[in-house]
Image 1 (cartoon, rainbow, N blue to C red):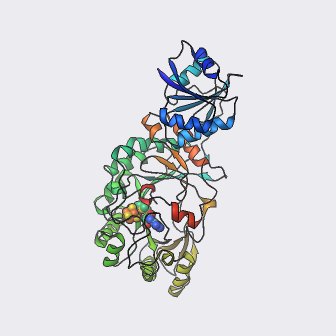
Image 2 (image 1 turned 30 degrees about the vertical axis):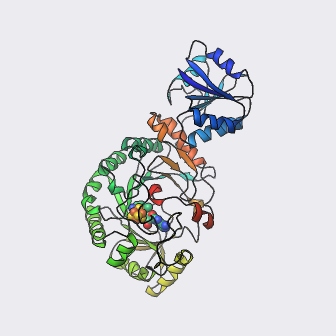
Image 3 (image 1 turned 90 degrees about the vertical axis):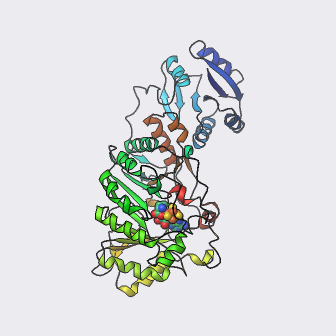
Amino acid sequence: MKRVYILSSHPLFGKCIETLLGKEAQIQIVGHQKDPDLAMEHIRALQPDVVIVDSNDSETNRGKIIVQVMKEGLKTRVVGLSLRDNSALVCDGEQKTVEALDDFVNMITSGYGVVKESASASPPNTVTQDGYGRTLDYLRISVTDRCNLRCVYCMPPEGVPAKPREAILHSEEIARVVEAAAGIGFRSIRITGGEPLLRKNIVGLVRRIATIPGIDEVTMTTNATLLSAFARDLADAGLKRVNISLDSLRPERFRRITRTGNLESARHGIAAAEAAGLTPLKINMVVIQGFNDDEVPEMARLTLDHPWHVRFIEVMPVAGVFDWGADWPGVNARLITAGEIQQRLQTLGTLVPDGGPRGHGPARYYRLPNAQGTIGFISPISEHYCASCNRLRLTADGYLRSCLFADQGVHCKAALADGASLSTLQSLIRRAAESKPPQRPSYAEIAVRGAAMSLIGG
Ligand code: SAM
Ligand code: SF4
């Protein structure tokens, strides 16, 4: 017996549905409402199997319910039905043409993705664009919210409460999302975290993702402290290269900024990554005024003797980690802009603009005279590069987040658990893409609302 909720201003709409479906489908109408906001409250409480929205009332009602149900990750499926011309239905946000009552009964009684596509449906679109014409081809996946370090700018000393294991996506679920994404134009996957190397069988997950047709490259962002044990196997599994977070070359400072980390183990990780061919290496340094900014020239000079791409990142405000302790620079004094960093590096010689390594990032690259590697600047605060943003993020608990700084997106864990088809997942990915804002919120807003980097993956 399917539990059905009705959203219609017409009191007889539900009765008509019952009569229409009659013997064909076992349904029980569990509620009827004409106001979409009230209906949403009931849907949350009742969790019906299906919501049928009267399409003759308002397209907006239907849209509202579909977006909200998907956003909240409810298992309820939404079908828009026009009784006036009972041919056009909307299911999971996609237009379907229904030629016979059977098709509609199928929608009500079956799981995701079983509805027959109409013969006239246009061929699948293999590119994903957001509402502002940006093409998205890069998916960053946080595979765990756990970390072995406690970097001051990322986490409070006690860490962030870990999500229960059952809330975290299984490897097969992650692979399904990647498979769906690959079908609509995503080509590049970055594995991140938390610390991705803490995830059980991370090598198996990388291998699985690397073999998905359409995926050109799988890369990883890691703090490298566990990398020496994994580098070779990861490379064999198909990982192309790694980005390594390294904020200081001084052991004491490294420990202070990571609260628990050991610089030596990170250095071993870097060496192992090079030996395994996980190159070109990118080294990311979050620059904090009055703490490690004096090491900027030393870091930049690494590019003279190593084919590394050393990138300086502006520290971003993250809600919940404002108070780093008394002996740290205050919030407003911490930021040193990419422009200022670049200015300081002029003492090392002329920085010549450079194409930098192949990649998807927003960094601007330069090269010192005769250097093997390049210097990059990533300036999410002082300049934004939203116009060229090409990415979506999948959080460890299955939220397709459209912007690092804004909480817009679509939950997909429930749909995955429900055995969602690739086309349903693709609809969810496109919906997440459509929710992408034109540009990030203001600094003040980020500072108040920014979410845990470890769950999102940076
Ligand atoms: N644990 C891995 C690591 O540290 O490389 C991957 C996850 S970490 C969240 C990803 C990236 O986010 C790191 O390069 C880290 O430096 C960056 N990050 C985290 N919090 C940040 C902040 N408040 N400002 C700037 N970058 C930040
Ligand atoms: Fe862990 Fe990376 Fe966050 Fe540091 S930046 S606490 S290593 S997730």
